[in-house]
Image 1 (cartoon, rainbow, N blue to C red):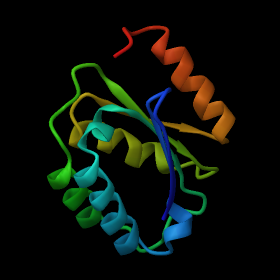
Image 2: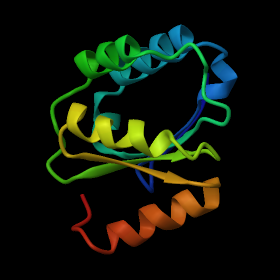
Image 3: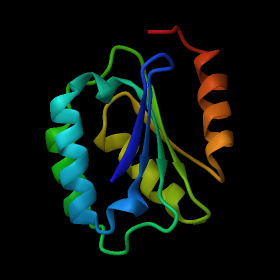
Length: 125
């Protein structure tokens, strides 16, 4: 799975499509947050168009189990997708990951702008 860590902006960018399958996404993401637990408190941009079609609730449950403690300040994950129904999954994830809001944008630049706008409304970490 391809990813980039923007240390200065404290943003993690992930490309789920490059992993190929939900099992590979889960394995790579758990390995990443195990090696860098502070990433769980950063804002994330997740490219997921198209979403791996083998993703299940079990994958999300396993990711939630591996997730670190809730961040001090609410963090966000912005899914980059054209999928009109992904917002329903995103809303469920809000309850699965404490102090993390899951949002949808159509492209990466819009996702970055959304993070910047929201950071203007909350204290910087």
